[in-house]
Length: 243
Image 1 (cartoon, helix red, strand yellow):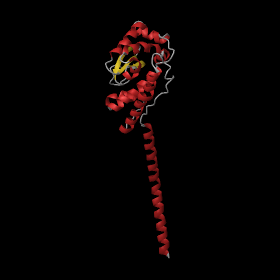
Image 2 (image 1 turned 45 degrees about the vertical axis):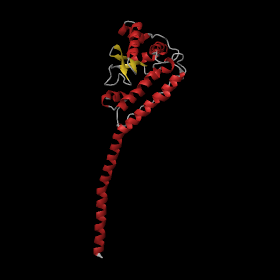
Image 3 (image 1 turned 30 degrees about the horizontal axis):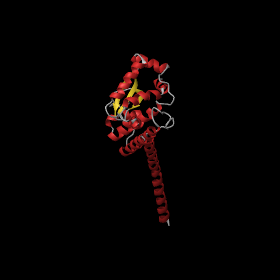
Image 4 (image 1 turned 90 degrees about the vertical axis):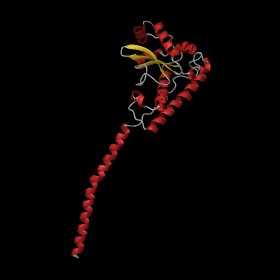
């Protein structure tokens, strides 16, 4: 009887010891899981999105036709967004922001670089255009342009040349670099935020000179497309980006 009682006490003590030892072990695993979850959340993959077009497809006519706008926005742009997000997931890319993503463009795959640029550039492009635009800037935008280029006409001429002389597909840009404005262009879907860009700075105005941006209406007459585009520049948005 004594032996049975002693066996029972020994078994009970063993169970208690195992339970006591197990508590910190379980807590440690729980804390580690929470920590891992927090780390995952802080390093989530960047996702690009397509901004809502701030006007109707036909709003920029007669300078940019409705069919071109619809195809450009709903087909070309949406495909860039879809492709870059697929590549981000497949290649397990993380970035704190779009700016951080582009700052490492030299290390990105061609799919990430081209489609990421296409997604961001078009979001920017839609915003720097609007229907019923003034043909010339005023206030801070005009002052900054005059200070950097001497006059609005000189600026317009230089920007037009950057857009005309970009061989093949690409973009013309006006960027802020410190207190000065600069004009340049990039090939394909590169932009001035990329570490590989030919021109660097904070974008304040852009013109898409890919053929899909104008070919339905202007065919090979890029010069006419550029000349008419000045009628839809959103100078208020340009001024905001200079603030």
